[in-house]
Amino acid sequence: MNVPRTFGTIADFFAERFPISKLNFRSMVQKKEVPIHRLSWAYYLGGLALFFLGVQLVTGLMLLFYYEPTVSDAHASVEYISQHVEGGALVRNIHSWGSSCMIFCVLVHMITAFAMKAFEKPREITWISGVALLFLVFGFGFTGYLLPWNQIAVNATKVGLQSIEEVGNYLPGALAEIPTRIKETIQGEATVGQATLSRFYALHVVILPLGLLSILGLHLLSIQIHGMSQGVDRPTGRTERFFPMFILKDFSLWGVVFLGFFVVALCLPFEAFFAYPLFAPYDALGSTPDGIKPEWYFFFIYYPLELLPFWLVVGLTMVVKVVLFIAPWIFRGTSRKTLRAIAVGGALYMVVMTIFGQQIYEIFKGGHS
Amino acid sequence: MKIGVALRSCVVVSALFAVMQGEVSARSEFQVFSQANSGRGVDCAMCHAHPNGPEGLKPGQIGSLNAQELKLLGLARTAFEPGSSVENPILNDFGNRIVFELGKRTFLELRAQPELLGSLLSADSDLDHDGIPDATEFLQGTHPLSSQHGAPGALFLHNLGEQWFPIVMLAVATALGLYGLRHLLIWFSILTDQWSAESSSSEGD
Image (cartoon, rainbow over all chains, first blue to last red; front, side):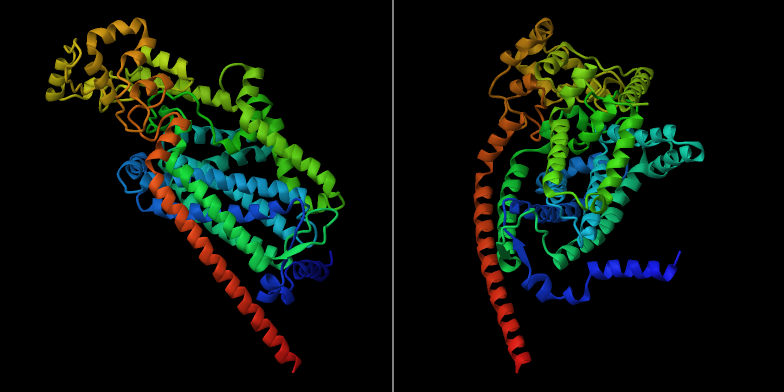
């Protein structure tokens, strides 16, 4: 292998993605134009995801002042926030709704970006960093779910961690040990306990935010350098200035969404959708209440795991993950019409599994999952 | 092993521990009815101080009561007629309210027809002030003592009515904020355009 030549190729790749000549205010803001076409609405989804990330950071910081990451006090501290801290119930409710809204926006943003071929050269790094951000927000969801230390939190986490260990059954030789080691590392002790809570807490409030902010910086920089993708196969030729027109519309949307979101968070407690025994403090010696499930945004993988062979679902998931990361190269020559069809299929699957997953499960297996 | 199997094994192990501790929760007729009627999971915490029910050594269970609380328990067990102000330490406020409104005699008779409990309880009583009467919460399988828990639609409408003032204030603040931001951004845009024009004309000179 010609090492200097390989390094040269890599350097050229990055030089093309981050050209020095474009790293200035004039190019990244003043001269930036946003295409106008029938899918232009999708350009606002990334901004909305960013808005909800801001909401999560602010409310998460507020919750940190009162939350106690110990198995003896975690649930009591969450109850204290909800019942005795001025505005605590609202802040906690905003954080609960905000996590779902952020993940929803990130998912729709990714699907529409795929449909618009936003990963096309020179936007590969924008896409890859976006996929990494998607997995990071899933990580936020998974780690944050445990923190209230209630029945649904601990039992759902146990099931999730158990699934990691199961992967080992399908790996050959020494590789079979790796998932168990991963599970033990995450769990920190024989079962989900104080070590697990401490690790999830550290991941949720320090490690994942640091990772997210750094990758988000790269993602935003890349977007500003290359601008929005053309989005459709036949551009209309019409554009609008990014600054101030697009930004103004973006902020106006944030304002409207903030208002609607605030009203929902103020008037509709997130917990109202669940059976109340699920929010009782976790009791290792008590009975496990019915209805233990992951958050809705994991249903697309939870129900298939319940219905289909484990190896099949895990295998397909791995394939989808790899395809997502290398989509810019796999779909380089694919038309946007075809990409739209794939995106619609993917979105349809997610919607059906999220809304009708339980009914589908009952049809094939009978009873409750 | 699949997730369902893992979950079931969790349940079996937990149940085994519960049996060893002598804490098998009494799934009363009322609990069974509420769960079947609403389709929501319900446990003893709807009426009892402890979610696993009255039997056991944990706080709110009979085994944990001190002499004073045992005396109260004894008094509460004789409250057969309606209107007796009882503070049974193994019941929560809703449980005590049922005994107060119906009396223990009627309550025990209702075990054969638990569906009547909702209609016999006062429609005015709303212990958690969430706008949903306790009797309705019993029928809907939601917690009568948690203002954060109730049928989502009813809860939303009630809270909307209660919180209209902060919502209107927030709408005004958001509108004014956006108005100010819009002018600030337009001003900044004009300014940067002027700077660009000046710098390109000076480069031309």
